[in-house]
Amino acid sequence: MARSNFSFKKRQKELERKKKQEEKRQRRMAKKETEEETPVEADGDVDLLAPQPATEANPEASADEPLAP
Image 1 (cartoon, rainbow, N blue to C red):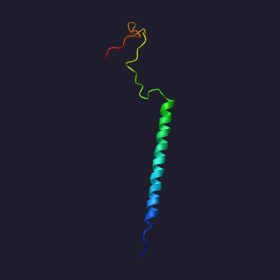
Image 2 (image 1 turned 90 degrees about the vertical axis):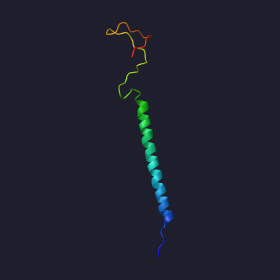
Image 3 (image 1 turned 180 degrees about the horizontal axis):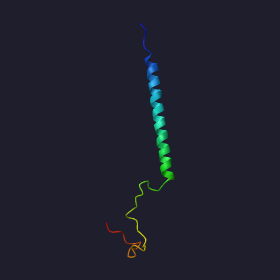
């Protein structure tokens, strides 16, 4: 009766797992780099706590006063 080569199968499984982890790490690094390059918010959200400059539509707003919610 032939014996199975367990150590070979185990090593192949470990190599496949490490390969997947490396690919995942590469994807994460690429995603992180793209986020750092574009600091503009993707949703277009406006920071409501940041002071708003006075405009023609709202001449009473000053840069020192926060907007009321």
